[in-house]
Image 1 (cartoon, rainbow, N blue to C red):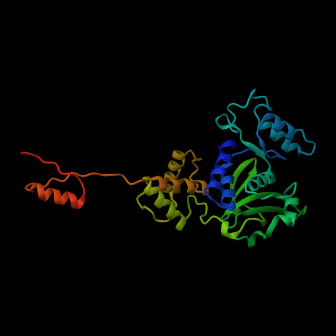
Image 2 (image 1 turned 90 degrees about the vertical axis):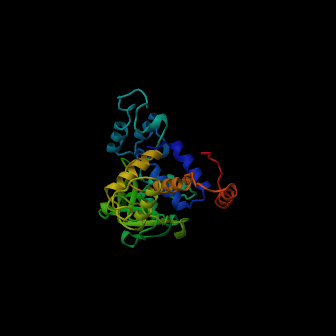
Image 3 (image 1 turned 120 degrees about the horizontal axis):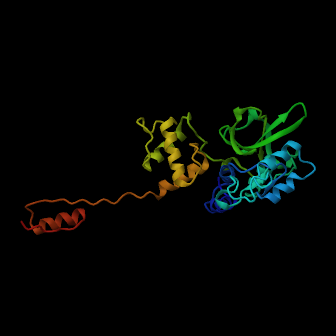
Length: 310
C-alpha cells in the first residue's frame, strides 16, 4: 500500500511528464488502492483523531460508526499507536474517504471540482457533467464516474471511478478494484474538463485478457528479460504472463497483483526506456597478416591491433 506522501509526489511527477488529467486520475486511483473508507471523509489524513471526529458525527449511520472504530487499532483498543497498522505503511500516513469523497479527492488534484455532499447530490448537479446517462451508453474507454441507482428510494447509493474497459476503482471498506459486470452499476457521468482526447489508450488487463495490449505487455516483459512461457508473445494473458507481471511489479515496489493498470504500464515503459543495449567486445585472431593489412582491417571495422609473436 502506498503512503499519501508517495502518491502526492507521484502526482507532481505525472504532471511534469505532461500526462493528461484523465491519465493522472486513473494512475492516482490505482496508487490509492487499499486506502481506508470512513463515512463522510474526503481525503483527510488517517489518524485516530480524524477517525474519532468522523465517528462522533451525529449523521453517521450506526454501522459505519462501528466500522470506523473496528478498523482503527487505537480506537478499538488493540494498540496504543499507529505502528503496525496496515493503513500506516512504512510509518507513513494514508488518507480516509468515503465513496464520493474519494472521487472529489482524485479529481481535485487535477483541477476539477465536483459539487455535492453525496452520490445523489453529485449526480443531480448537472454543472458537474459534460454528459451523463445509463450505463449501457457509456463509452468503453471513458474515464468517468459510475453510479448505482436504487429505484426504491430514487437515490444514488454508491459512486465509483471507471478507468476504462469496464474496470472500476471505488471506495467501499477500502479503495478496491471492481468491474461493471459485478452488478449494480446503473449510470455514468463524464466530468466537465475531461476531453475524449485525454483518455488513456491502453486498457487494464489481467489473466484471461487477450489482444494487442496483452501482446504489448508481453513484448516489454520479454525485452526486460522476464519469462512469459513457451508460447512467447501470443496476445493471451495466461499464468506465465501473470507470473512475469507479478515478478516485475515486485521489482518496482508495486502491488504484485498480476494486474496491468496504468501504473504498471508506466513502470514497464520506463524500464524499457532505461534499458541500454549491452556493450560487447570480441577478439578476432587472423594469422599471417602484415602490420599494414591488420591496420587496414582495424581502420575499417574499428578496434585495436595487437601483435602476437610466436
